[in-house]
Image 1 (cartoon, protein in one colour):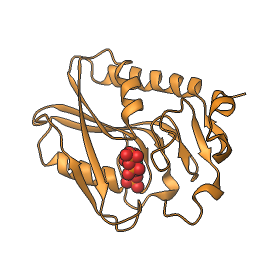
Image 2 (cartoon, helix red, strand yellow):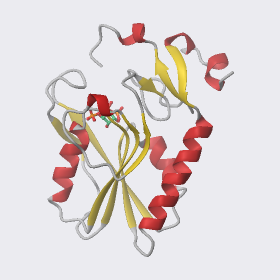
Image 3 (cartoon, protein in one colour):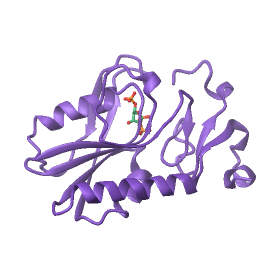
Length: 191
Ligand code: PRP
């Protein structure tokens, strides 16, 4: 039995484990190896997009063998719901100057692509030495704008997933597995 079932009070809302912590761990190691190889001899600035990327970023940077600095950005969408208007804005900007730096944007999931598309545009204008994207989960069926993904953990179907940083109404981010939320839980809500 998977760990969350027995001792998680929200268990009834969760349908099944899509990716367990062992599978995630293996894949994060592989991503870390690829990134370390590609950036050998250079120093990296890993930028996590709050809050979903928090846990992925924390695990990923510990698999890197190149020097790495960390920064965060927080974004939100205008209006209610996650896909209402498509307009994105920065709620918390980077603390570091990225001009001339090798920047790796680290994201938990790419859905419509609007968040990454917006951030890439803004960050490109700040003249980094390089700018790449690493995402744990890619949900291509939902894409509205194309996004260049340099490192991808898993391509997943169009289901609502939580855990490993991803939330539903701020819950479930702490789960070690990535779990599918029952449809009845969010049906009728704008998700
Ligand atoms: C989620 C996720 C990405 C974004 C992806 O963030 O973490 O940042 O949505 O969606 P998109 O490709 O359609 O733009 P959310 O707004 O839920 O905030 P959170 O990271 O704080 O959970």
